[in-house]
Image (tube, rainbow, N blue to C red; front, top):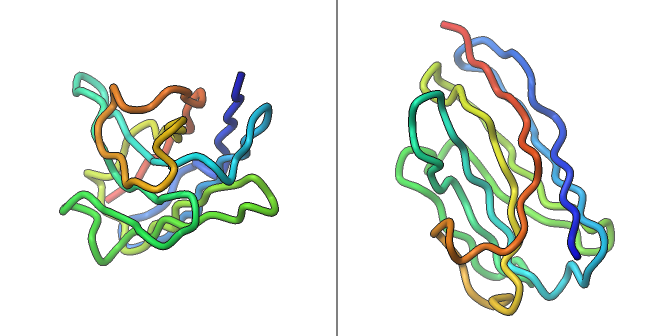
Length: 126
């Protein structure tokens, strides 16, 4: 059983930055692909970014390219999402997720992920 705990959310003004962290436990972190998703009120959960087990491949949703960066530290069992130039439309609950058995892939869809964190709220004011 893998446990994922997100942190780092909060309130930020438009144009500002936040760094989300997701700490993993209970599994072999360096064998998983990891991803970030978000869900705004009344909307479906959507893909934000993904990173493979070695950090050799990353993938981003078009709406965050050039603004967000996903990274991981396998020694700390942690994945990060650096969010810059934030916009009000980035307001959502952000979730990290792990994809077991897909470590070398970049994984972009909700059903492909096996474990999810509880989410952290990000609010961007205009």
